[in-house]
Image 1: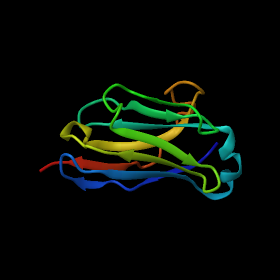
Image 2 (image 1 turned 90 degrees about the vertical axis):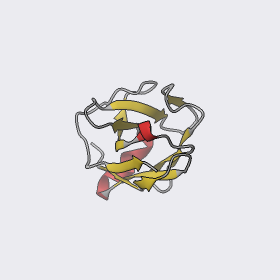
Image 3 (image 1 turned 180 degrees about the vertical axis):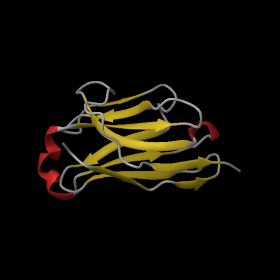
Image 4 (image 1 turned 135 degrees about the vertical axis):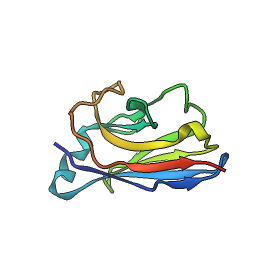
Length: 124
């Protein structure tokens, strides 16, 4: 089971951009290439939801409607990293962002295992 670490969150104004990173840590990195990865977020008072996912080879991506056209997911398998580029941020993008292994072709978490996440706050 991979151990994933999220980073890159912070405070941003509406319309600004942030770039989140999800990196596999420790010896588990050698299994990285077999897993599809998803990004999730949990807004205050709401349940965690999947917002983007990418296949193990990086060729297939999917997005929830709320972020489609503004967010972009990519991966660098040589660096065991998945990136979530977030553009044109909105206050409703505020929340804690997590990455996780997902079932291929879905935004369903494959394991019930979560890191600490990274906080994104969008406010003027």
